[in-house]
Length: 208
Image (cartoon, rainbow, N blue to C red; front, side):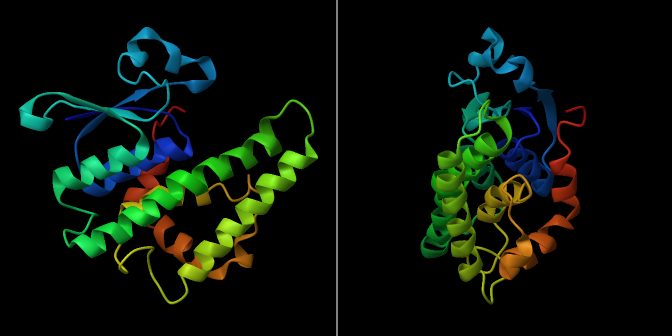
């Protein structure tokens, strides 16, 4: 059983979509980040960095409970645990990891800054909006060019690379992005959003 500690954010949705795609049994523990649940001693004991998501695999390494945080690490762990959504071939595997790192190092941080300056900042900061908005659109252009003639991000197979990027693109309206400007991204996005596991994972936790 996987114990999932999460909230309905882009990073949180990566873990819930992955669990739904794999069909692994899991319990959801909502961590209401708006109420600072991530700073409680109980959650800090699971993730000292006070971020969601985090998991505890009660049947982890060696059959013992195993705790893990950081969404990218969680995706890799669950893929290796099940042998799914990550190729075994070394070259193909690193194509997946490459795009996972693209999301972790680029898409997530940059899109997150756009969300902050456009939606959360207590004052209007045009420089922040321009700087991160411009880089956000550049990343969309990178993805759009890469997806030309491709169904998925790596090896033309659905993988954790796609699962990592999708929840961030799902908030394109927060980024003031028109997906019609990036037709390959839109085609990829539309094809994934109809997957039942994606739809279920996007709604976790249900009471968020």
